[in-house]
Image (cartoon, rainbow, N blue to C red):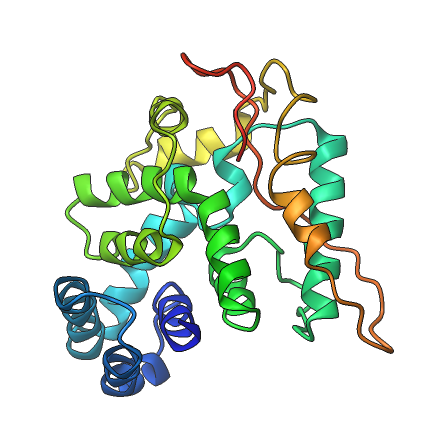
Length: 255
């Protein structure tokens, strides 16, 4: 599963000439590892072919519009959920510390919850732990997948493959709640600017009960920490995933 996670991480990165050149190698790596069905490998093959053959500037423009300018498609996982700042801060400290203890060095501008970085980390840890941590984010991945699919963007296949690797189904009530949030149009630049600049951040009810900060991802993060000698403490800028909004079936769902 390690190679497949690395490939998915690379595909969610900003398109570059190096990524285009590596497309055949990435495809071969996924095929050789055999973690995905033929159908899912075919889906990835289509986006790899697109990356390899399309104009690089067009690919980069689309990437920016989708993932940098559209909050509802952000690859920073916490953008999709609400939580109290105290829990948010503890989550980012725990996740960044876990990265470092497993030997994954973060650059100064990296955010711990940035999905490509998160997947790169998962490719370095035992498979069972990686599957569990992907499953913790399954509801967010599914919401992004559905929004990309609605736009008929092949990136949606990457999120489908991640859920296959997790071997877990997202909680439908949480997915519905996330999909109920505003889904911005990446072509409406004025509206997007207003959303990023003026939107007030609100926090869901029951923010301290039964959320990732206590019973979900943070607990798993702490459970798998393995200190490595000489690793300095970091000061990350953003937490990992949590969700504490009420849902129809569960007032305090886990991440």
